Length: 149
Picture 1: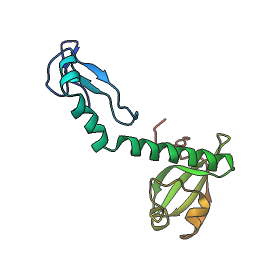
Picture 2: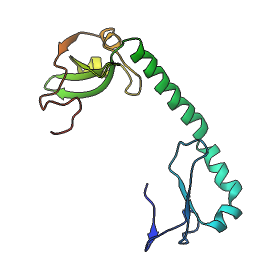
Picture 3: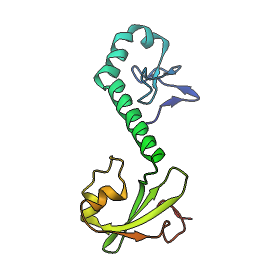
Picture 4: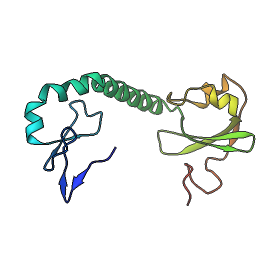
């Protein structure tokens, strides 16, 4: 979500008054809130409760644990999914390696969908669900993602 401005002044997310400042999430998880000095004082408990209700600390810890897990897998020499694109009846999946190189695999959509999107996945993990074939390490446009070059 974006911020609201009155001229060049940031507006408070709580009361809408211009002259707010951005106040960071204590866990660094969610977007900083725009809060005016008055609301910062009078709604201190309410603002803190928002981060508790939103489970910012748990979500941040989970995210950082996943990043550490991915880093450990890459350090072990495993290849991790970084991009995928449908190509006709198959899915072209690009995997990144810890040294910055990439490798590709083809698989059916059913095999690709068998591993949840947010799980760090290796070609071996996909192979447990069906046939995984070698593929180019780049898409047809010469990239490792679906970006247009």
